[in-house]
Image (cartoon, rainbow, N blue to C red; front, top):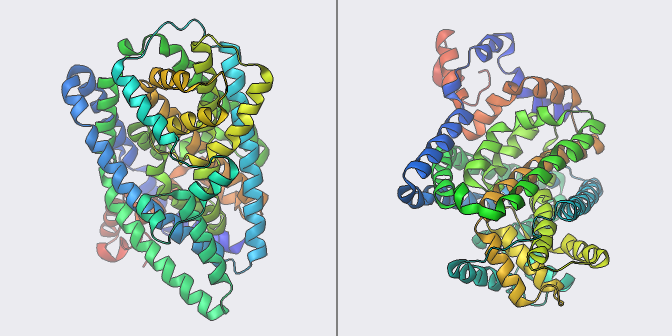
Length: 491
């Protein structure tokens, strides 16, 4: 466990005893989460008081997500290659991947089942009398066409259209997470087969490129509060409570189901693994607030890679599980898929037999792997799943009307999907790291009790309050600020 302790422990060890008083004196206005909250509150007020302006500032959130998407592919590629190739043992890497996939499949089945149960117990679509607007119907047609673009469908269609790359560069250009992951795994296997000296040089070079990419992320993250401002202003302006009408029940059931899944299911998994789910949520509060503002879990993927490694999970486990989980472990999306499907059936006055519900859930085990956590992906996946299921219950007309009904509140539900997906992947990483014997449990316990222990690592990779604070600490000590603030470690 020396490797894990070294990588994860460095942030907390850098300043020794001298660092403790500084953490106690940290100023709230120097932390990212504070400014994200300011952005969210400011955006909500703007959208409420001046909805016309609120509708026009959505581009701030869109621009932030667009910039994040630019570096998600390279981050995943570099992280997976370094994580697998640095192991130097493909059998060990394969064992880690197998454990991760087993966990993902179980979590997917549980989330889909809970979505079905919630839909049957609360029946949010029963008695629905609303009708979609012409604009929503037109937008729904576009979503259905997007869901129909995947050619063959089924397992073969999933492999050809979503998994296997068409070229080496295209997945990076189109930001296709699954295909980037496939390329990264192939590259990592090839690098692992090199002679040890050559493998170390290649891994070192890719790791250096990753550091440059994280430097870019560090610059982009300064815009997170502005993005949260724009995203929240648009959400409140476009989907105020008065416009939600009868769909409030669906929203309440969905958010309640996600809360149940996180607190009860993930809470139980966390307890068995030896940590507390509420402390985990506190650890990643910055990332969750960014998701609330942007409705995209992809926007925090690079930050999670750094934070979980600093919290005690090995670099190899984090590098494998987090990127893979973004395509294979989407708990919130799975809840949304089964709940949304039954809501559409109920809204149309149709009762779906239990056998067909189980068949639909089994189909969605596969189709849910095509959604990568970006705003709108869940709606497209729902449409594609219903089309693939077909039958008398989900005719093209019924799907078009159902999607048009949901589309007005999809962004509000998208936040619930993204938050649940994020928490689920964090828990999965910590559980699999322990399962694989690559979790520094003492370090994790210390970080969960005092999340500030990871702040220096986060500041070094992504920017934040520790940059200025380290310089201030060095200046007080009479040292050279530039030397002290270099990477958050002692000179």
